[in-house]
Length: 176
Image 1 (cartoon, helix red, strand yellow):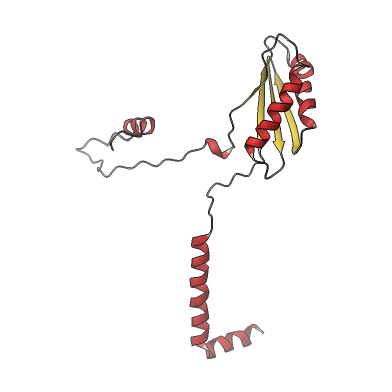
Image 2: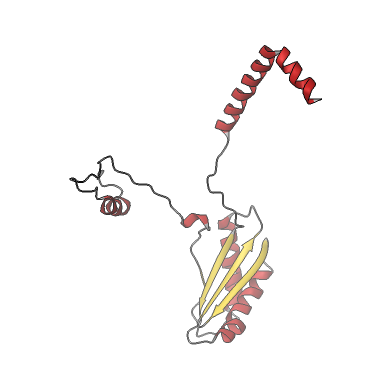
C-alpha cells in the first residue's frame, strides 16, 4: 500500500507539490492566528486563607481554627477540594474551585463563607485573611539582559547587574 502511494506521488509530482505548499500555507496561517500561552496555568482556581493563632500548638490550631474554616468552606458552591496546614500559631487553608471558575467569584464566595466561620473561631484571634490572588505561574518573571559592549582584556565588563537593578525598580529611567 505504501509503495503504491509513493509511486502515485512520484508520477504526479506537480499536484503533490501544490497540495503540500497549500497545506503549508494554511498551517502557517492557522498557527499565526492561534492564541499561544507560553506558560499555561495548570492549576485550578484557588484561594488561600491565612489565620493567625498566636501561641497555639498545631493541634489546637487544627481543632479551633482550621477545622471551622474548612467546615464553612466545604459546602460552598464550586468548591472542588479544601486542604489545610496547621503549624504553631498559623493556619493556612487552600480552597480549590472547579475549572473555569473566575478568581474574583471564588474570592467572593470565600469572603462570604469566612464571615460565617468567624463566629465559630475563638474571639481573641484576629479575623482570617485571604492571601493576595496569584497563581503558581503568576509569580515568575523571566528577564534577559544583554550588553552590546564587549568585555575584553583591556575593557571593563558592562555593569549589567547594577543596570538591571535600576531598570527593574525604576522602569521609567532611560536605558543604561
